Length: 354
Image 1: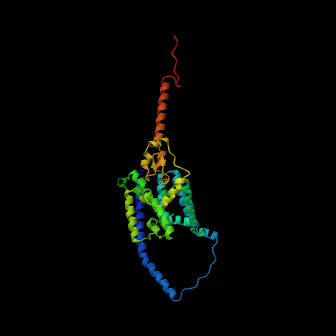
Image 2: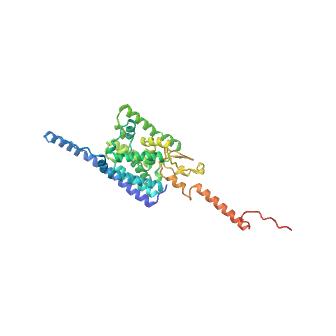
Image 3: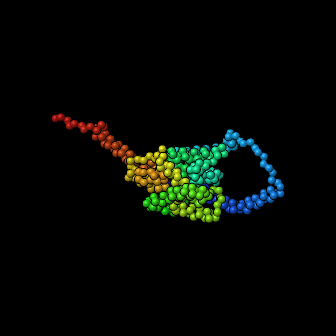
């Protein structure tokens, strides 16, 4: 979908600032490591000198006290979730990009907390965060689950900070750089993320380890904590995303695969389709996610990005509305012809008797 030049320039400036933040954050983390080690050594020395005082037991805080401590966190997430849903229901392009920027800034750099494949492991073995200390996280997780059941992979298209970041890249970078993957190859490549998901689950049950998740998920980029190898891999993947839009989200993300499986058997509120969609390929060509095949919406791939739904309501582009307008003009001309012939009702006037 073509964006106005003013919106494109604004997004380009925001994306540049985000990339600068990533670069500076990685440098700051690298410089902070020696200081952290020095501080640890100092603490150890103090303990050795006899300054290791005995801890005093304190009363456990009540649930109300814990909720009060987490109120700001819960309120911020509620505000962000409200923004995301308003942008989704309004089908406003500027508001959608405001949400994407907010996702990167809030869910990414500020919170550095996204739904992860690690949470899938936790659900499978019943090992989840303690509710009293993680109320905002539970609000986030419930929001993700409910919206996925109702609308599909809305989380991927609106909430995920990495997905938002690559969508902003796609909006800013010149379209001439993109490489269109052949549909047959695109469909086959879409299965890779399911292989990664099931391989990760198998590895978790076989070894009990979760540390490998950093090699199959990229959400750590917002924490600035990673090895040189991981940063190089991220750079290569972002460079590839310049040419193949939403590369990781479409083909490699195990969490997207899991949400896609849920969406494929639920999605209560589906995207409407017109009868003309069988022959029209306008939305199929517009879709950035390869989620439309003629009249069929592939629910496991659709992230509710709004592009096709905006086209459905565009009376100047959608063939459904163009055909209705054409029929209306034809009927109007026929009615005018009947009026000019002296018979508005369309009856045949009998010849006068001699």
